[in-house]
Length: 183
Length: 255
Image 1 (cartoon, rainbow over the protein chains, first blue to last red):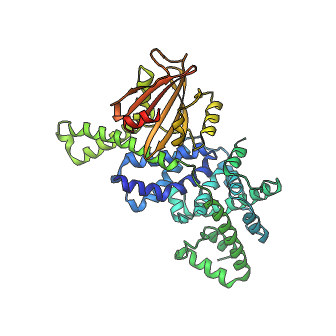
Image 2: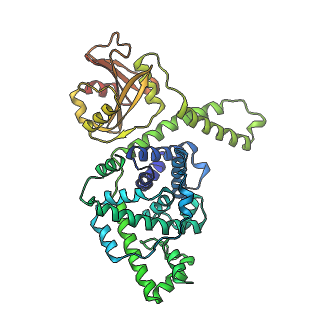
Image 3: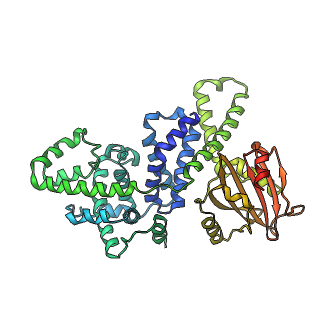
């Protein structure tokens, strides 16, 4: 792959990949490492292995696999999926709650969602991939993606409510919020 | 289709309308238009999803990440280029068939990746180690343009901190830093950039590395591995090595 093409690929996708990585890894430094490692793998494998039209899905898939490879699976993930479906209805004031929050607080709430649900949920909110592409990227059936989105949204709403209740909706820089989460 | 089934499907409908043409969504969407309660739920769901998606779009990557990705790719391409050259000079026989060449290329990629990730950087002298470290390519552990924040982070990692960098470093754009080890001694690395050229400053405590011959006046080393330029100097506490892909004159002017 030529340098201009690679640069264009980086410019098109590194921001979304970083947001996805940040939701998974929670720490800024780890998120950056994940994004760098993803592009490193692309750069070293060359253009012969993939069609460029599929680059976006490939990058998200690779980043997620690198994340999974980097840490042990959460033992609770399976049991969480066995829980009965959560309450799906959403109150009108919940929309206002999000609108009034700063982006950092919303990300902190997103990071509180169990990882099994967080990965598809973040990809969904990034809007880069359809649920079909999310299923492919995470290597799970389509029905599982829908189920995880539904349950993930329920967890996210609960986390947003907690953030609001704890008075964390004041405007803070993202880094400060991330540090607070790590503490 | 019950409303609960429709909700299950519509939960995967992106707020930006990216799934409007998806046939699997069509029936649930139609039902949401004709059933008031489902329609109201879908409107709230979409509004909530749009609000969260909007907040996520406000998050921006740290300064320097893009440059770090591109620099890392350049380093990996150099590694690949060396692997390819070695393969071409090998005598061709039965293994020269495309399938074996493809397999060999895959192995070369894997070896390249493994070597880059796992092999230790060598170098007897501190400056030799520093040049090899940069030439091999590396990842930053802390990214940011705020030099004070980078020094704070290095301090938290118990890395040696520069007493004072030359005044002209203020003209450079900081990319980030990391901590590493040379002969069992902690080394701090701070990285800067200007006009597409990178400047990497390695800092080690004078009592931790061989500092014989190191002086306050910088000593310049041109034509190092990978075409890099190096400069080394010391102060009362630390020994410094600067490695750059800029020209020697540019490095001289900096110090």
